[in-house]
Structure formats: structure tokens, C-alpha cells
Length: 138
Image (cartoon, rainbow, N blue to C red; front, side, top):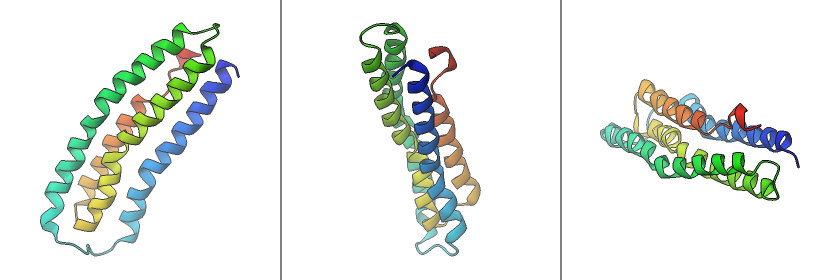
């Protein structure tokens, strides 16, 4: 498998994981009318969503190392293994980076404001954007 195919595959997986991160939030906003639980939990859930953004920091360091390793392994015997390690690091980071949006989806049940829910989704979107494969790696 050459680098172009591996990059295209990782980009496709990234788009699918992006949809997996943001779809539950939009579905919950569209489907849930009245919140079934007390709105006194709204602020703690929002704070938990904000704190969950920082869980991706150690994973991002590993992703950067995997990017550098994939760049250094070009045209060598370790090229395929480096791309696999990069894909695994990207998936781990994207899944943890999706936590604010998922917490925002659950926060709809405690009547968190729609703006706050969308801010949590935007935070996940920005985090996920950091995990895109750069064009320079090709």
C-alpha cells in the first residue's frame, strides 16, 4: 500500500469519526424536547465537558511523534508500520477528542442551553481538526 492510499484511507476514517462525534449531539438536540432530569446538573456537566478537552493532550503528543515517524520512514521497510501506528494514534486521539461533543449530547438531558451544547461540539470539532493528516506527509 503506497502513501497516497494510506493517507486517503486515514482521511476517510477521520471523516467517519467526525460524523460519529457530532451526530449524537445533533440528534439529541433534535429529538429531546423537555429535559427528563433537573437542570441543576447543567453547569457541572458543562464543566465536565470542558475538562474533557484536556484529556487529549497526552494523546496529541503521541500523534505528533507518529507523524514524525511516518515522515522519517518514507521509502523504507518501516513505511507501512509507521502508517499503521499513525492511524492508531489518530483514532485514539479522535475518540478522546470526541468526548466534549458526547458529553454535550448527554447534557441535553439535563437541559443545558443549546449554545453551551454547540460550544462543546465546536470544541470537539477543533480538537478533531488537529488530528487531520497534513498534506505535507504525502
